[in-house]
Image (cartoon, rainbow, N blue to C red; front, top):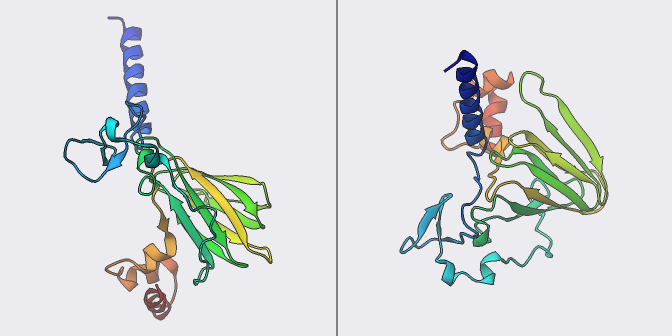
Length: 221
């Protein structure tokens, strides 16, 4: 085989490997539906869930009701996230998509967080939100925008992002995520509220704060 032929095969192999890595999360399904079920008897394990027998699947497996109801924002951050993922709709298993409703009181915030397994696209139904995301090191560039009713914004997979109600009334937004279970890591909760706690000396060095402040924050979370 010629040198060019060898190079071509190497490139094809690398592209194939890259493609498989890119689709390593929420891969495309190899069947029409795979309704998640907790009972492993007579079931197939796919994407972290057991699949219900096709003959026993029903419309209710693909249905959820309740997103018309406002979430309770009476909490320290003044927001509430109602999640509709594979745990609420078993039929979402292997389909690579989910949904959330986010309610905000005035000055309410969905604190800085990440979704390790999904990109998010948000649309504002009511109110005015200040939203943004930050790119990775070393740039740490902030992309932010003021959104009004009907506006849409995208948060790339894995990047820290937030939403803050800058209006004087309640706000509501809906988000679609490119995963059946995108996961969420709220930064402050993870850093200051881990179980067991991170050694305060580590956080004191990282945040360049007095150790007493770090210990106070850990007690808060």
